[in-house]
Image 1 (spheres, rainbow, N blue to C red):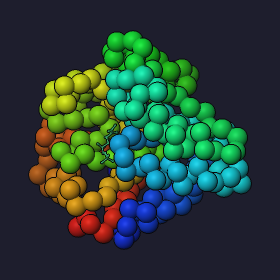
Image 2 (image 1 turned 135 degrees about the vertical axis):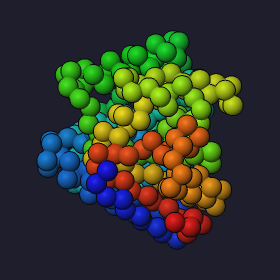
Image 3 (image 1 turned 120 degrees about the vertical axis):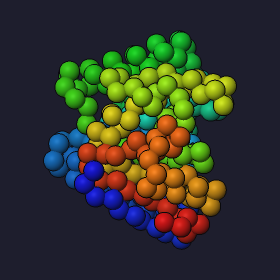
Image 4 (image 1 turned 90 degrees about the vertical axis):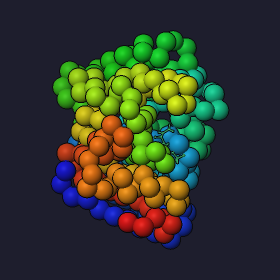
Length: 239
Ligand code: 6PG
């Protein structure tokens, strides 16, 4: 990990605006340096406002076709299901854009066994890199109140996988399957940003950032990017 940055703002709206400005800046920098910007989006509810704010930007703010949007995790549902992370991004960002479109890579859940969806997505990512390593420019993550991130939940199988980029993960406490990117590929990023709002996340933040290391119980501890780590938090969080 290079550096850790903390960006604290008063309200969730202020956090979303700060994250938007940061996102635009990082995108521009990646496009200048690499000709594209490769992003992993997070699900959950916190980033929704950020996506809405991004949808208001125009082609001068972001060169949208040079953005490649992947997902950090997906629920085991089809694209139009209310729980779909893809659908959340589609409704809050993609459908609202009045500009040229980014390139979108949906995790293909809902129409096939979860494990096959995970393998297909990994193949998509491997084809994208032409066989080389995968490097994100930006990874957006949320933090669950049990210290999960993406769909890396406490005491689940995916936590120990290091030779796959994408796996199906059984989440017993939710009686469900999820597809998640693994920690090694999420960490292969120039910038990883957690967006965390609300005092109900305090315990998870403390465990994730604390000195007692136990990633099986606090999976967000696995996030240690090759680049910079960013925390975007509101004033309800003590950090
Ligand atoms: C998901 C996630 C998950 C999420 C956290 C935080 O699909 O649910 O990607 O890791 O980011 O649970 O969710 P909130 O932002 O809703 O608190």
